[in-house]
Amino acid sequence: MPMSDAGESIDEPALLDHLDWLIDAGVHALLVLSGTGEYAYLRPEERRRVVEIALPHIDGRVPVMVQTSEMSLTDTVDTSLHAVDHGADAVMVLPPWLESPFERGVLYHYEHVAKRVPSDIVLYNTPAASGVEITPAMYRQLVAIDNVRYMKDSQGDLARIQKLAAISEGTNASVLCGVDPLAPFALMGGAVGMIWGCANIMPHECVQLVEHIEDGRLAEALELWQDMWPINAFMWENELDVGFLPGVKTATEMIGRQMGPVRRPQMPVTGSARLAIEAGLSTLPINGVDRSRLKWRAWEDEQDWLVKRTEALGGER
Image (cartoon, rainbow, N blue to C red; front, side, top):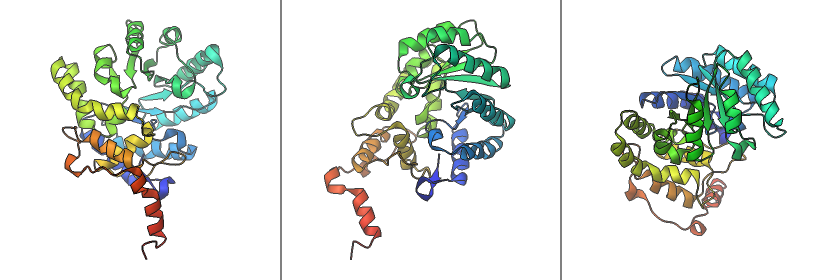
């Protein structure tokens, strides 16, 4: 989500430009208001505004899903209907979190969202973040609902993805993988697609990888993946205190997209971590950066936040 004003305002022209860039790169579909779209940090009126400007701008060029997760059933339905009214082909919904209603309540939540929202429903399973797991047994019940069409699984377990894909056979539902470093293996193991934060960084490479696998060019896919894996792996797990959201946003800016800052309490990426991200980007065949610009500077010597602040106050007198 491109931001201005120190992360307090959405940069609407930059958002629409980024959507165009992703579509021009050939992505097969778009998810509006994803985690990397800073859904969790946007005010309700901002989320609605994004839907109101982004979906007419996309204008059917690719299928669009919108995340409409809310704590209560009524709010989830209202937010979902707003997205569908503006052209969403599907809505992606987390189970109720924090004060979770446990399995019976989670099933009730999805059943009633599906009953009242006339679009495809994407279940969102990310128990490490939400604290609620959609188990295979729950999934088996939910896929009996006609318009439950997908599950985005972000557990990071390839065996689980294969099991969910097996449960999906003979139903209307399919599995989407939400774990970036598993991409080629999940697609080979039964997932029909990726919901992929790192696609903001390298959409051309992501499209090529998926199409190699769809067309059975597995050797070419794995060869390309060797170049893509470093930055995907770093974003998912690193030792430099870089969260997925600010990491992807920083990398997207580094390759030349206008992204701006993250919204607090998310923290900007430190100088040392920026070097690591640049190193990961340097292997990308299309959206890479020139490795010759990389220069190691110890964090203790840089203190970039302090330099920037004191310069702003006239510290170079």
